[in-house]
Length: 179
Image (cartoon, rainbow, N blue to C red; front, side, top):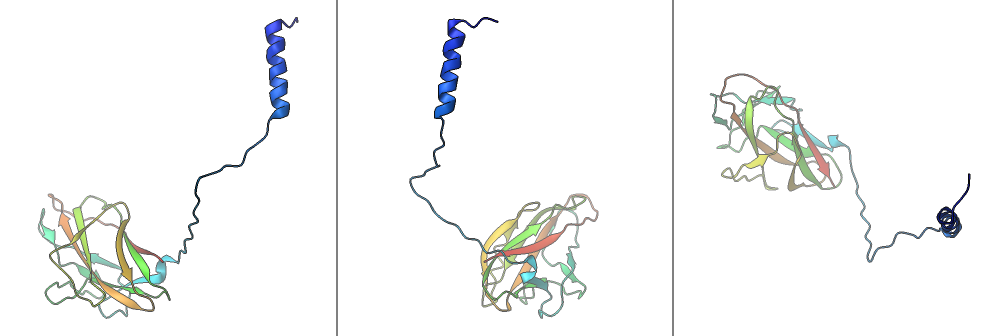
């Protein structure tokens, strides 16, 4: 096979480039360092109102298409009562550091609930019941609420808008935290 002038020039250029190649370090005008401390999810407990027993779930019972603001927890069968400042559950931080709370509500199967809301008491346990925040079902909801260290607690209040058709459904709920 005969090599023409064009092929010879291209081959020479490739050989020169191959012998002169080198790598440059990646550079940026400014840099920053981020450090994250992540603790086990079980640092924040979901307990009953007196903070002693784990709550394993809660039930919203009501007519179709209504918003239910008085769920009952399991196994204690305590019903949320916003008039008496009695939450459906209490979030207790067992961590030696203060944490920021993130709520995770999975989608309902089947879709028995069309919307959910939450309210978390202030550090002094006071609550503004006029403003339930939207709970993003199916994705984490970062509350921005800090929970103090060493067994500090806050009340968790929930509501749910039930679907138009009667039925039952299930959803997983977890609380994660970040220092």
